[in-house]
Image (cartoon, rainbow, N blue to C red):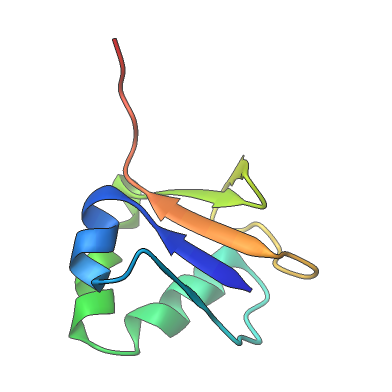
Length: 81
């Protein structure tokens, strides 16, 4: 699946996105898997209350299933004006 990183999440990971092969069942499983890769990923996902998730371009929670998903995006909460 494609995993995309935006704003400071992208800065910490050092990539705008990547293709990920995973057996993760949920977003939370994917986050644990990514965070275990190396320190830069761990730094990006250390506080998931500060990160939002979209699964196939729909906002989702950490318990969202990944079966059949093509894209997961991680980004900080947005505010606007």
